[in-house]
Each structure stands twice: as C-alpha cells, then as structure tokens.
Length: 128
Image (cartoon, rainbow, N blue to C red):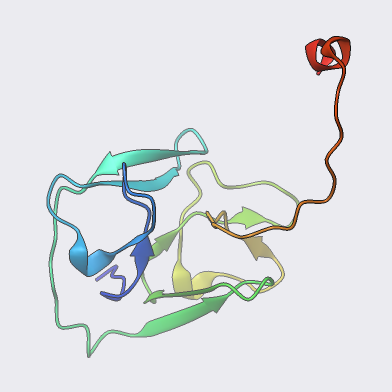
C-alpha cells in the first residue's frame, strides 16, 4: 500500500513540533498538500492502519538539500517538473520520480542566522 514508516514526521495542527505518524489518532489534523489548489492545508486523519510492510518495496527519495523521504514505492507524490509545471493534480508513484527533473514541496523548520537589523523611522515603517 501507499505507506509511510511509523517514524515519519508530520506537522499536526496546534502542535509546536512535528509528530510521528505512529502517534497520530483518528481525527488528528495534519498538514498536507492540497493538490487541487496547489497549497498546504490541515486535513483530518480518517483512517489509520498498521500494516506489515515487510513485503512492500520502499524508496528513499533524497532532495538536493539533503532532505530524505522514505515511503513505499507506490506512495502518491505530486511533483513539480523542472520547468515549473505540474503540482496541481499531477500524481506519480514515488518510484516514478525522476532525479533532477522533478521537485517536491516540503515544509521545513530551520534555524537561520539573522542577516541584519535596521531601525526604521515612523515614516519608513508606514511605507514597509
């Protein structure tokens, strides 16, 4: 089936940090791609199964920034092609992703250094 490993992380509504898939409950709302409109939204979990996936074929998708996504080979993904097309309704099986041709939208929580800070006058603040 189209599975994720139990230790896969998902963003759950009203939680400050990601939650593992195995800690979800029915009705939990998780952040997912709304492939019809191309944006992100929280959707309720309507079905939970712990299946024996030992006979499934698994893939590890590695993105250019080092992000790794593990899923069954038939897990649906909504890639964006290298030319920027796709992503709205175009669905592939994970095993059909093409390196350097497809991109995936991911949500990351990273610590980023402050580049600069400047004090603005009241007028400048109004213009911002």
